[in-house]
Image 1 (cartoon, helix red, strand yellow):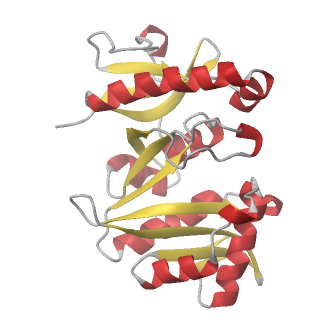
Image 2 (image 1 turned 45 degrees about the vertical axis):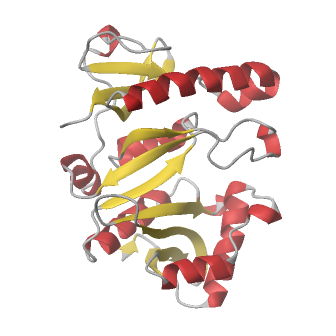
Image 3 (image 1 turned 90 degrees about the vertical axis):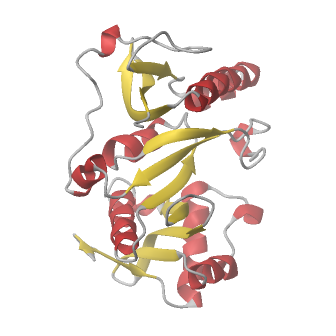
Length: 262
């Protein structure tokens, strides 16, 4: 698969997997202990997962890595890592890698890809829901344990994205369209801050803008904000809602949630 100057293909040999671990460290700032070991990625790929890289010439600038997922009611993979080297930021590589992953899965009869992300990372929320057409039906409290670094002891709460590869929104996303982000009635939708929402078909769940700065300036306030959001999100998902897009309300980012079909 080609995307402009990039060539996307599956990784082939141990040297390429080693290079992928360097890309992950550069992209995410992982401490050495958390850099994905090449043997683990090679083994997971051999066991039915996939690892694909984006090359410019011979240089690997990004990769996506997924493992088989067997605890759902349909064929699925869990996309554990997506990393783009800082030298290639803002060149569309994340989308190209995910679209390659979609094609790889569909060719093997796999219709669902899941992954996790920090719900307070607005850039990732927009990529996952707006550009790729994924939805979020689950909240995973402190999924990885404290990750350290700039976030210290902050719980690593995560949204679990579900990418339903043949859904209308994902098909549109694969054709280059963006999922609508701001419904016409956004200013009138109920806002959920805690507990259950009033009777409605759609609701908004706000989250802090510029959370890294909030946490840096007042860690206790950051942890409290994370816990409030987590309680509200967990209650909504347990009650049959899912996040379908990202919008704004009163100048702050907010997830748009709808009742799950069926």
